[in-house]
Every structure is written in C-alpha cells, then in structure tokens.
Length: 94
Image (tube, rainbow, N blue to C red; front, side, top):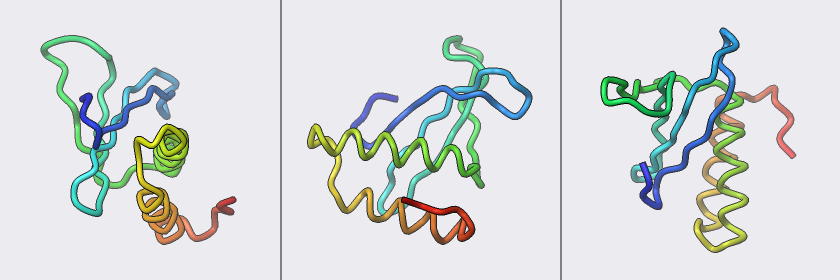
C-alpha cells in the first residue's frame, strides 16, 4: 500500500476485533482488501468481493478529505457516491 490510487484504514470487524482495510483504484472501479493485523510477513491481504456499507463510507470520507488537498479529483468522489447509491439504495447519502 502507499500509492496514490490506494487508501487504507482500520475498523472494527463484525466479531469486534480490529481489521485493516485498503481500497485500490483500478480503472473506474475500487477493489477492497482486508487483513486482521497490520504487520507480519505471513499475513496476506484478502480480497473483499462485496465490501460492507461502512467500508464504502470510509472510502468516500477519505476521498473527500484527500480532495481538499488536491490528492483526488472530484470525479472520483462522484463515482463512489454513485456506486454507493447503486449498492445501498436505502441508505440516505448526504
């Protein structure tokens, strides 16, 4: 992790334990990965094919904060908002 097209954060998993997540921007899609600990050679990133809403919202928050510092384009934010609306139509965004 560390490239401009990658963002990472730490959240609590469903089991109450810490989990580390990162999202990678590839073309017009975002790929999510997680792992239970931050460091260790034997720990691999596991792909998340269907990330939960709170991971999408964490990504959106990171993009909005990065946009202020000109790290991300406004189009990136629009694309993620659109994807959240498609995947979670019942969630009130904004």
